[in-house]
Length: 538
Image (cartoon, rainbow, N blue to C red; front, top):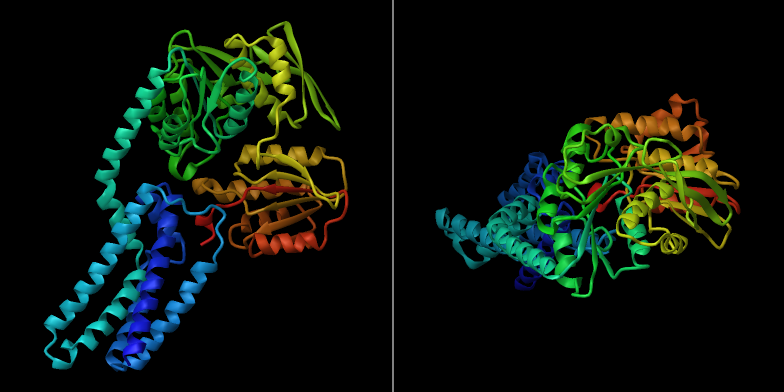
């Protein structure tokens, strides 16, 4: 019996370690914000819903009253083995990063779990009047049952650990923030450029970095380091005295996020690429999105340039309330001071002219495709001109531009299939642009693979429905990933009179990929629009 007891206890502990690691991973992907973690948990198989907890509690209590230790330990061993195996073999798109903060939260949550398991077990022993329930064997049985249950329902303890550590984390973060601000101020003469927008900000950042690098020593925030701590980490780990320009991408999911970054880096110039419907689950309204994005413009001092995309009425119609000089840019319109005109497409990329009011400034060539890329290049050109980069150097930088990964990145497989990789994220305006590019691509069958758009609040179903209708006018074949998530897209396709025999609904991306591999032919073009994070696949 002792071997069975120890085996059960060790396997329950293994299950708990894996369970809390998984919960930590989800907490990290929700930016360590309890309200986001709560929302994820409430929508994810009812992790914070009382019913699964009640069902499990009833099962455990039935086993308890049966008082059959063989059954209890057998249940614990089987359940722990099965669930541990499930967690260990699970593949995540974005792996857990073991930062110091993650380690602290994990450690505290494990302490809460073990202390509560032991504490409740000994409490049960103390209040029991039956001598049989006060033995070491009974205590071990209690610990096994309670530890398994408290690991299963551990979302609450993960929330408690995160909450308990918030004063500590705030103090640590404030120190990092102050240190980063001090480091940035110590670099004499450095120019800081902030970039934000509902989409396009990462591409504009990369394009600006490439162009400015023809004249300056430039540092930019890498990847998607567009949060306050991402910007802080970039400064503390990568900023050198020889840097002349720092480009900070600024993301936001709620009002005040961009202002917080601006207060640290104090940008001299700004780019606002787009203001559109995105993250409406936290912003609630487009007006809140607009106000938040314009926090960057508010931070620009007199003498600075605010490059604004005039192709969006949400930007072009904004009243000027900032000190910096507004500089509107556009593509094939007369709205902005700077305009891209006479765009030509070829198998080798694009050519277009940059005009300032009625004056032609330069002719540019790029291997990139699509008007969205022209727009992001124009944003970079405006700032490059403001920083006195010669036109010839701008032309060289544009010619050397590379596509940004997962943002309508064009690839070709060995089998002759063209892939339009727009999997980083998706929003209504960006999805329309992607479908427009797909429609203009030469080739065979045009295929769309998508799980739909998320974080659009109460408008999410409507926008996905419209996405389906738009898709019907372009795609020859559609693969929807996730039956529940993509139901509005399916309905939109059906509403548009699409041949529903040309729609395949996959359970996950693996099934979608397998299905596509069996039917794609040379010359086909596939658009991958969006790729949901792990928090939407649990």
